[in-house]
Length: 310
Ligand code: SF4
Ligand code: SF4
Figure 1: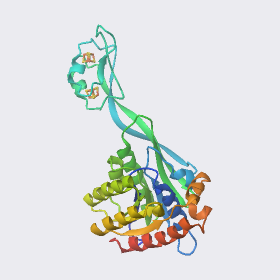
Figure 2: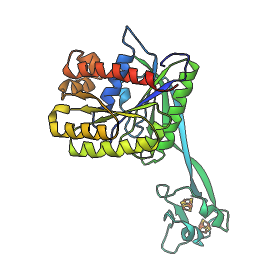
Figure 3: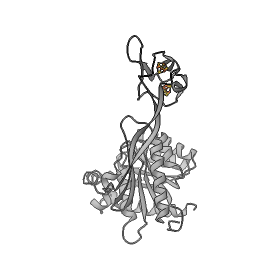
Figure 4: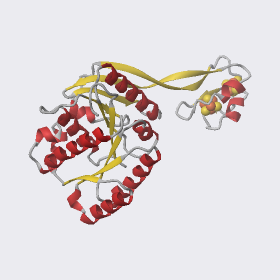
């Protein structure tokens, strides 16, 4: 049950690719979770660390900023390098390279280095050291509808799965400390490592899809990933009126998978207008066709969360 005395339930919103309306829906859920009547204290996590934008709508104050340190990469001390080339021989990532045609000195390409440290052991001069890299920042901010954990991965850095795990852990600790019963996670797009990190431990996933061929293909991939991790998944179709045959195909697929399409949101320009204005659509246009469906969708999601095991 969503009560302050129990461990926080985790709801994750996912989509096979960006641009399906997942963040708009996460923002609307943030608003609806705090609406008067039956507010449910919640903490929000923007797990799309490559392109975080939930904050654009929830308008966090950036209260606490933390460094995110990822893996290490090799660095050569030019004072000690004798240009023997052993590092180049052992490096399987072509990251150790001569700096001149005569190979008198070597250097490491930081973008190619995988941090395996093979070169450190191979170097006869002890000229190579592993150096930890700051790969991004993460934030714990206060926002209008509750605290939000979000992050920024620096360009060219690839440790997004670890960064997602970091902010999720921090959000869970904050929920525990403050008896918050719900985490709402705006997941990363796709099915890669960050999605798996963001989904770990989720009680319920809501897959947001569109009824296009590509959308259905992505839906199947994400559904299979979630099933592998035994995370129950429900489906919500956005722009459901643009391709009725696609909706029928999704309904059939959901049936075959013993899942359920719990909402069909019509195409509604107010969703885009709300994002441009930096507001949840349920605030910007509370009586729009999309907002009316999202209200019912939120009630269904809360009901299903309450049915998940504690
Ligand atoms: S193995 Fe060491 S000494 Fe040899 S080229 Fe590489 S860094 Fe220089
Ligand atoms: S740490 Fe590994 S990947 Fe990086 S330069 Fe050395 S051998 Fe290559």
